[in-house]
Length: 635
Image 1 (cartoon, rainbow, N blue to C red):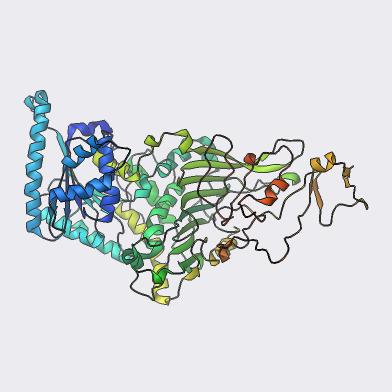
Image 2 (cartoon, helix red, strand yellow):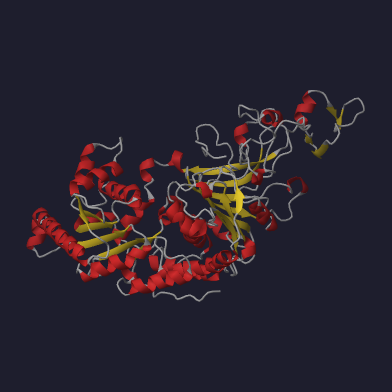
């Protein structure tokens, strides 16, 4: 286990109501303002906060980048970034009126002096307007609070230069005012991360550092602590005695999407697994904090991360999708960078000892999905007729189609006795208004302005998470071994299934077993007069070959296999999908066997249909039933 340094508990939390922002004078400086991240995330988030009256209308917004550009030209760039046909022009035009632009190198102190002069002039106008608006408070000597947010949407190796110039130019001089938002990646391993933090510590204190991980701002991730600690039912079963496995899964259909220059230097372990997925793991596995204050949440996350054992090579499978080396943005045509990784981690503490924690991430896979799957143990001492029921499972769908659902076993209505998995769900799209689901960056920027660090990454968390992955990353680099190949649009390399089977799972993702074919139910046979006294009334009074009476009210009859020569799997199904196929589907997508195996009076909406089509893999959602949206787009 790693050593852990606990922080002193503050007397009170730093969280404040968002409405108080109107009593502050706010300045936002975005470095790398012409970059992809700023245009896709930062400026749209700032605009939405102002449109929702969570960012003061007089906020000063300044973009800084190397490209020479006038403020008017830059506003045209920002206009494209924030444009939406559903939003009227008035709020958009007002936001653009608050935006200006400065250009210069990131290590040019003279350019930062020009930036300072521009900021001070605009902030003087801002203060004068505030005094005019609140003349009574101004006469009483009351001055507003000021917040300066510096958003560093640049590579981490530029952080020191920017922070040094901000300090030397006199712009960043008050820790009560300054807040720095730092984007990942924070190094490539433990050593480079520590070197980066040591360098930054000379110009930047931990108090003013907000290391952003946008997954911590997603609605379902923020709900994890409430789900766990506000519902007594989960508190009693959230342990090794009841939980069989925990999976944190991130899947993307897209490949590099033009990010090859960046991605090839890092790979999916550094880009996704070491940060996003490990942060989710910490929230799932941590003990209950004393409160939801940032300091208390941090202490419990540090405790559990210090108990995670370094990832062993035998517990890791890496892959690279076919065609990766042919991507135009990949310069090294011999690259061994992984685009897929499945890892099994172990937490050595009394609550989780022996429970495998699976982290799985990949690009160019069969679907877009991020979720947490918590599979529970089988019912001990179950009666024979229920002994083969699948285990309960709790799924927290982070994206897309956010939701929480609980898989239970249920008797299907009807005269026969048939038990099928059902889904008790909370689908956010049907329950909540879309306006209540802000983007992660909106929420996190608002938290920075509020001085709330409960959803940001502390330096000690970085150290502990890198300690988990650095040994195996170095081992991969030393060996020079090539990642396992896999076809685009599949679940990844077949070796991932082999790793899953070592831990008692059929595969990673849903554990729903493939069905062998349609079933004939006893109720149907009785109505046809073909079964009497539990015996099949064929001429020889025997059931069809291979049939078995599983229960006095259900006879399972195997369906003959398809004639050879007809493919049982979709054409695009890769090797890792073999064994996940269910009953062969008709060409129009309606499973021929499905209707045949449904008993009379049984609605398909009642059952857990499992994975549809290509990836009988991870889509295990029950059909949602009338009036409710399904999972949509997966499978």
